[in-house]
Length: 209
Image (tube, rainbow, N blue to C red; front, side):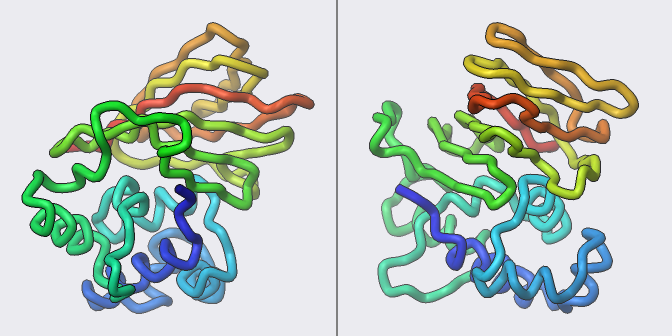
């Protein structure tokens, strides 16, 4: 199940408006232009990994919320309230939209213009951990402009296929199949695939408490 870029944009806009944050103010906070924020909100532009994390962090919401399904009536609600409404309707804890076992055809998928695809492998109710299968296409990067990103929490990754260059601060590391990495997400970082084949890995991104 692919998450529509328009749906992501609508939820970002709804949460921004709910918090009374202007386009210009959000743009200043995340270091982007107001026009780019507007394009993301209207579904005309897919955010990069770093941009998506920056926006959700600035708005005080979880990246996992963008994976939640839109209500059947199509009504756009703030991202935090969408997850709550779904939970109340099903009488389950917040954000428990996935079964314990997730088959390949049932994964929620987010494809980004920067050449990165996130596949959500599972979620435990009440947790704030993204359990993902992440694919970086050849030339794919977490930040198209080459800008290092940082946010709260920790990251754990294990590369299954291809090669992936990870920059942490002033050092770069080349990951090959079987290599793993872990670091505090507050460390400026970026990922990029400089090879000719997709780089595929399993990632856990835990948000700060």
